[in-house]
Each structure stands twice: as C-alpha cells, then as structure tokens.
Length: 398
Image (cartoon, rainbow, N blue to C red; front, side):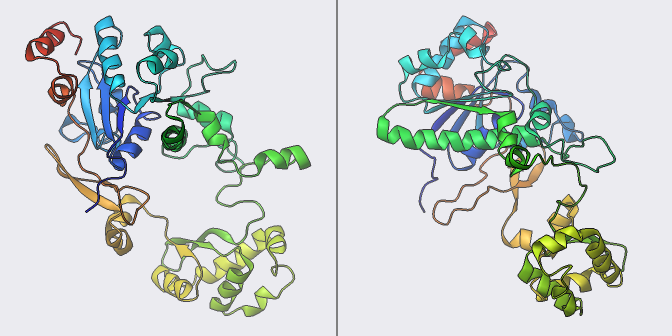
C-alpha cells in the first residue's frame, strides 16, 4: 500500500474558524501533517460553534479539525512567537487567516519567515487580500459572498438577497487557498523557494460567477435573482410528483430534452419550434415548466425517477442528511465515513474528495482535544525538555 500523497508535507496552521482551517482540513485529508496552533485555555472558537452540542461539544470541530494535531501557544507573547518560528523552520507551509498585518506585528512577516526557511509556502486567507484599499478591513465570508456577487443572484426575485445554509465564501476561499498551496509546493520543486499564496474571500466567490462580468461589460445585462432556475436554461427545475414529493429534472441539452419528451410520451415537443433548441426553450421556459409539471404531478416519485433514469434523463430528489444516510450510492462509494471519537463513539462525517485511484486520502482522526499534541510536537519535534515544557505551561505560554 502506497503512502498518502502529502505525507511528506508539514503544515503549521495558525488560523481559526473556517476560511483558513478548511484549507488545512483539505491538506490533512491527503496526508499532510497539520499542526494546529491554538490559544491556550480557549482554543479555536470553532470548538464552540454549532446548534447541536452532544456532550457539550461542537459537531463542527471534529470535521474541520480532522487529521490535525493541536498544540497550544500564545502568539501574542515573545516566547510564543519564538516557538512558532522554530516550527516554521521545520515546516513546508504556514497557513493563517488573520487580518493583514497581524503576522507582521508579531515579527513573522513572510520576508522574515523566508529568512528562517526559504522553502516555506506562506498561505494567507483574508476577506479582501493582502493588498488594495480594503485589505485592512475585517472580512467575514458573508461579506465576501455579498461583494463577490453570489448573494445578489441567490433567492427569489421578489425577496431580498438570500444565502445558502453553509459558509460558502469561507469554504471557497479555503479551497482556492489549497489549490494555490499545492501549486506553490510544486513550483518549489523547480525553484527551491517558497512564496506567498494570497486567497481573498470575495475573489474566490467572484471566480465562481461564470459569465456575469462579460455579460455586463459587453451587453449591459445584469443577472438577477431567479429562484430555483437559471435564466434561459430550460427545462431545469423542481417539479411536483403524484405522491406529494418533488424531484429536480435537468434536461436543458437538446439531446437530453428529446429523451425527456420521449419518456413523457410527447416526442413531438422536441420538434416543436418553441422547444426544439436551447435558445427557444429558454425563451419559453415558464410554459415548458407548466407542461412538465402537469405530467410529473400525475406520477409517484419512485415511478417517475425510474422512468427518467431508464430514459437517460438526469433527475433526483433534493436530499436531506437523512436521505444521504439511506442512499445506496452514498454507501457504495463510502461518501460518508464513521470515525472513532472518545465521546461520540462512531462519528459520521463526509469523506475525502476527490477520490484518487492509487494514493487516496482518508479520515484518520477526528478533531483533537485542545493541546492534545503539545508533548508530541514540543518535545518530539522541537526537542524541548520536560522542564522547559512545564515552565512554558506554568507561564501560560502553552
């Protein structure tokens, strides 16, 4: 069995909450040794987040901190900063998501860190990036979603802008930060030097906005909120079923719409000039949705899905977590894993994505206890004595 693909990479994670730590989670999923540095006594605030708290513990933390080691260190003290510098000398990546200028105030600017370790990749995740007039501003994921454009087009047209029920902006910035980190590590193999990866939340959101910018620049067209559909993409909507359920059908491609028309017993729809092409269907989307909804509303959901799948038409239910646990495809691909946990027993969470054929990642441990790896890192990696560790602990440094 071959080793994990990032098993030779050590990451020092200084960030908190989600925008930085999700990047650390992704790197750890594929084997990187992620040493998470937390404030003594309090730790990452993510340890307290979440609506449901069995045993008084967050259910966010075991996921976003999985595969990581936890050490405590007061970064506001000279002694704590010295410890981090010693870690950096032995690391491949420093990951942080503080407001720009914070590392610099602590005497750990990228320039100074590169003096200690020229091969270090410094990955920085912020609301607005490290440069520009907005760089000093506090920037949460929700603000990046708003300024990056996705809030304006999310929701129903007769309501204010909405949001998804997850921290989309933070996760997008972290994912792009992970990509940038891997690119920088690859380039380091040629140049021998590390560099700074600058991932801004609003830019990560903007990167997902498809043709929104050229549509405005070339045609003065402003995308607006359109509820459950995309403008001029039809049919692609949620339709009612005969037993009170609903399913999503996506048949906007010409060949797929022909298959849908055949399944409906209405093959003539595919030849009708109102629906024969992508552009024509987009211009008559409301009328076409009414025709499809009248048909789906007469058939129970399971029968409807069976007919559509057999006919080669993409369709599916809108899943809840309960549906995911019961779905045989999720089970066959091990999309959900169960990880041992000292309090929860077996803790279910999403598996590693994407799947690699030869060197797949994996969830080895759930999020650690605060300072669980102090001895492992400070004694085992840095070579501190038991007396030195005890003195640092007594002084509140770790």
